[in-house]
Image (cartoon, rainbow, N blue to C red; front, side):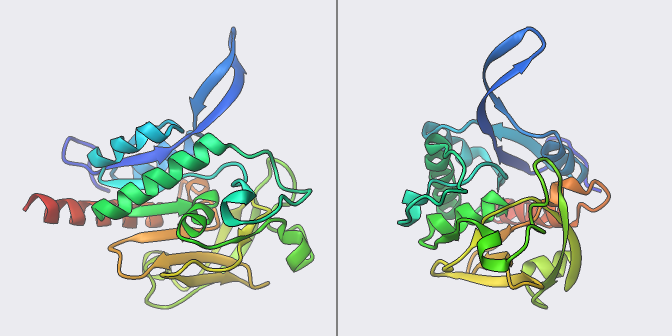
Length: 243
């Protein structure tokens, strides 16, 4: 495990902007499940939360890597679709902020990891579309068994892909999503699928490390391999930039 000192890569984590109540407070807050910063720390990185504001995209210039975190459904209009009855309430401010952050990261050539909503955001931001309600396509609720409960999915990964290099060609993962990638954006390559055909991993060709997974790697504290691969890629690209 790498140290978390001043030389450790700084990893930005996109965060929710929600109305929450805790203690004596009831107000708007920027928040993220603790599992995200914990797994970044365990992988040897330094986590920094990014608020869901477009003007916060300039913070990407100070990062060594970017994680597009899980969260609510992306606004269907962003990929030219009419909202499905099962699609959740959109967060337009977060959508816009994450698109801006992703493009800033791509321009700078820093590594990116998309988690659940994050892989969907990579696909939408680059011109792809989404399946708005996955049970309609696969005929079961296994990817999202019930609110607040993670399901288990076995994913087959393409040998030699960045994800397979990190975790192997078959992995059992925790998932919680009712949407998935549909039309794949130009430049993205599907590198993992579930048994029912659902896209579970995608990577951007020609980029040092731009990877999205439909599952939640931060939910398994005993397995930090994917986050460690991101942190290692961040260290390599930073070394090249500062050489």
